Image 1: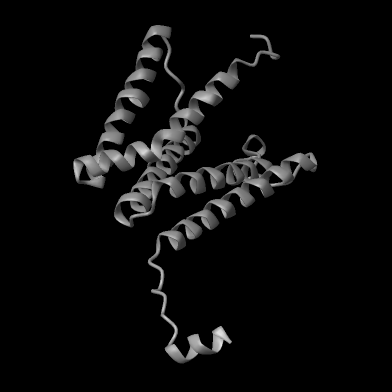
Image 2: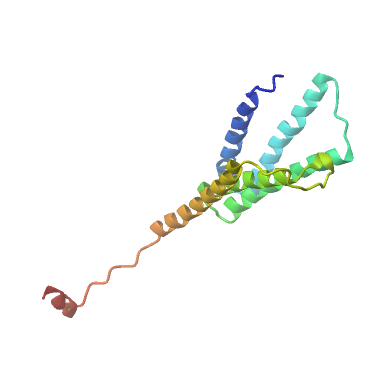
Amino acid sequence: MDSSSKVWLVFVVLAGLCWGVYVPLIAQGGKELKSSYGGFLCVGIAYFLIAILFPLGVFWMRGSFPKFTVPGATFATLAGVAGALGALCVIFATFEFKGPRIFVGPLIFAMAPVINTLVSLFWHPAEGYFHFELKGAPDWKLYVGIVLAGVGAFLVLYSKEETEAVGAPRPAAVAPAPAEMKNTQN
């Protein structure tokens, strides 16, 4: 395959679309099922259908199965654990603890790329499973992107607080006493 191909960007956009609708879909699913754990179970069924049956079909069609190693299976399974725990945390944030999904999603998806970037900057498992080191300073634009993601998360939280303040009941206006009215007319 041509290394200058940008086909991978199509899958980046598709992953962004899928993960971008995840929080609203799981929140609505849990609400309709009247059980956040029922929604989580449905997520598990979807994972079974897509993440187990699809690769098995690909292995069968290609006539080869991967060589499973302890480190490979361990890290790949930990990725699944991270994904499942993340999904469970979304359920806790939106359904169990009533976080508004309009704010939960942006906060999660502003924080995730920053964490991914920092881990990828320092962790070099090809040189040893637990080899951590900063290899060369990234371009300044990476740091600006991290700061902007932080600013974006701040703005989401600020917007949430502002929205809640606007929706809060305002104190009733107190009519001035007649003596005060007389003083203001002079």
